[in-house]
Length: 227
Image (tube, rainbow, N blue to C red; front, side, top):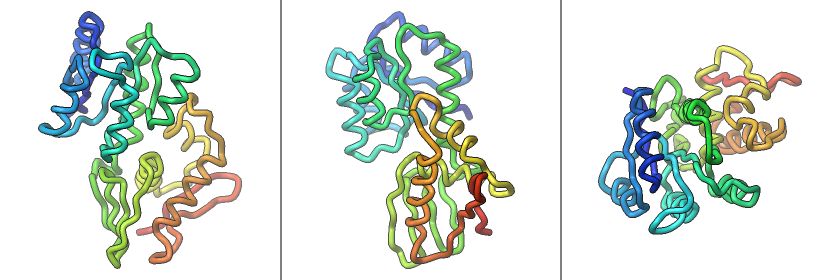
């Protein structure tokens, strides 16, 4: 089944166009024109796989909604799609946890490519929501790793995506450049140090209860080595 997309866009013409095009691409689409409708859906229905958020809305701001989602612990990735695309707005969007920030007007194919990129980075390995490895429970939906003794470690959303990517590709060493391209993208101004810091945080989530399951290959990248 294709991913479910929640679209928050108050402009009727644009909202109808995006909804129609996404449906033709095979996605499930829920279109809302107000923040209140989004809150109701998140409370009463199954969470979508991704949200596309406008910023200026009749009953508030997409930024405020994003901050609310983060505060309440929703793990749904989201994209900002807005005419407010200056540097301050983009920085605020990424600080709130946005995966992408697409300025209006935009080419629809660009939206699809970026949407597919975000969905792929948040897909659990082999489509699993959770995984148990040598007593460690890895929850890809709740972004948590629970040790055999029951100690729970909260994991950043992108760090969990990196862990899932390493586990999926465990048969090979994954380069830093590939990780950056797959999980961060050009718009986030990352560096090799960004990847290294994420690896450090993942290793800390497994210690002191288990061995180092992420092998470093000097000058190349990283490999998951747990069976």
